[in-house]
Length: 214
Image (cartoon, rainbow, N blue to C red; front, top):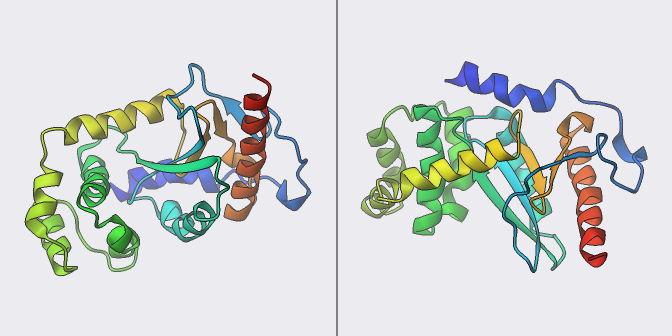
């Protein structure tokens, strides 16, 4: 699982360019983003930024503190949402279910970063549902409440919808960022995680200008 997911994560990190702080102020198709066609569903009153990620991705783990701080400071006309990606593999789908179950039980803020740490630093084995439930209980969360959400009737469809959105956006690896449902940020143009966020800001500015032009 880790070897396969690492290949998908690697798309983000191995093709860095040299844009850095000298990048142009205006986002350009091909350089900074590629269009998503047809667009993903997006709020009418907000410019939504979506992070496609997986708890199993070491680059997502490294990126998580930075994007969390960045998302907390977004302007009022921008919203932020995360979509875990399973790439249609059962073990990866379990990681997606962890995210959605924590979100449903209200434990996401408390345990989100802890999941990354468990997988990438503590080498916790989440290969069975029971292992997940035991870990959650050990973190002081209501294991029954979590298990009910994890095994909920709609969970499979929720994970499937996330994968469908990732497929529609034509992501090649994780983490990947989409803006306003219309633009997939070109992570290959980034020389660092900070660069990726700066490029994303230029794409947000383009989306804002697009909306004003309507």
